[in-house]
Structures are given as C-alpha cells and as structure tokens.
Amino acid sequence: MDTRINVTEKVKLKSPILIEGLPGIGNVGRVAAGYLVSEMKMKRFAELYSQHFLPLVILHEDAVAHLLKCEFYYYKGKKNDIIVLTGDTQSISPEGHYDVCECILDFAEKLGVKEIITLGGFAEAREVSEPRVIGAVNNKKLMKKYDNYGIDFKEKAVGTVVGASGLLLGLGDVRGINGLCLMGETLGLPLITDPRAADKVLQVLTKILELKLDLSKLETIVNEMEEKIKRAETIHKKVLRDFPKTKEDIRYIG
Image (cartoon, rainbow, N blue to C red; front, side):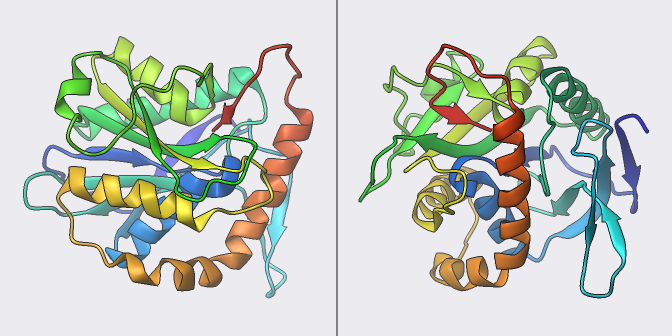
C-alpha cells in the first residue's frame, strides 16, 4: 500500500479552509479538531491510509480489525466551507511525513483549498495555568491578518515544528497556499491530554472562522473521546520512542 485517499462522498465546496488536528503533544490538535467535528456535526467524506503509519491494526470490541487512518470531514459555512483533517496517527518516519503531507496537499488543491490552519501543542515542560496560543505563519504578511485574535507571534523559542502541523505550512507555501499554525501551551507530555490548551486554541480558531461554538461541553466530549484519545496516545508514544534522536531542543512535536 502507498499513501492513498479514498473518497466516500463527492462534495462541492466553496472556498474551503483546511483545518488539521492530528495526534501530538498534549493531543491539543486532536482534541480541538475532534470537538469541532462533533459540535458542528460535520460529515466524513474521505479517508487517508498510508504505508508510513505503524504496521498494526486496531481491534475493537466486535473483534473487527481496522487499519490506522486519518479522516476528512466537511462543513458548509456562510463565507467559507470548512474541511477538518483528524485521525489516529501521523507518519513514523521523516520521509513518510513528506509523502503523507504531499498527498494531503494534492487532495486539498483539488478541493480548492487556498488556506490551511494547523493545530497543535506548544510544549513548555512545566504546568501552564493560563495557556497562551502561540502562532506561526508561512508568510509574514499573514501576521497582520491574524493580528487581532490574541495569537502570540513573538515567541522566539519554538525552534522546530515537527510533523504535519509544520510541514503542511512549509510545503503549502511552495504551492502558494497560505498557512497558519495555532499551538496551545501545554506541559508537553505525550500521554497527558490537555483540554485547557485545546480550549484556548478553539477560542481563537472559532473567531477566525466566525463560528458559534459552545465550548462548555469540551470536557464532556473529551471523556467521550477517551477511547480514541488513549489509542492515539499509545500510537504517538511509539512514534516518539522510534523518532530519531537529535541534539536540538525540539520543543514542539506534531
């Protein structure tokens, strides 16, 4: 199997914005994207499978085996339609990240995407009582566009943004696709899900997208997502364990 996307429903979208929220530090992006899908009652229309995911299947209570996958959902908005990409895992290899992200961008371009917003966690290695939302863009001109949303673009110690949240911005820039990354400050442990950081990211994201979203249910939804989150955390732990060690201080992953 190579990296492929299976379309389960053909949709026509109006100036769609792609939102990416895959498992990562604090599961901030995964939780935020999952909550958005749930609360906005988004419809799934495509699935992504890849040989670059861990070589395993997931067994559910019915004893049916399922491959790891990422899923695309859509929502019909007033000004822009919204696509949300979320799922079980990210690639386990550097080359796989490039392959998967290029596949995502090929698909996004066919759908007419001109703007991408990626979601993730910013690891601080300490308790954060009031998380900030750290921002990064792939075009300096975009800072002015997002200047009034309470995003901190002044943080100088990000260093690297590893995984889809970073590569979609970098590779998207080559294709002329504008990109914004929203990172919620979090403790930074892969096995601790941080709903507070996800809440802060969602507050900013909903303002940008001009969506009315009730965030009071976030903790309840996180509890309902517990099985999927634990599964993602286990998978992500394996990714971190197998990820090549470097001498650089990588403060943010995925």
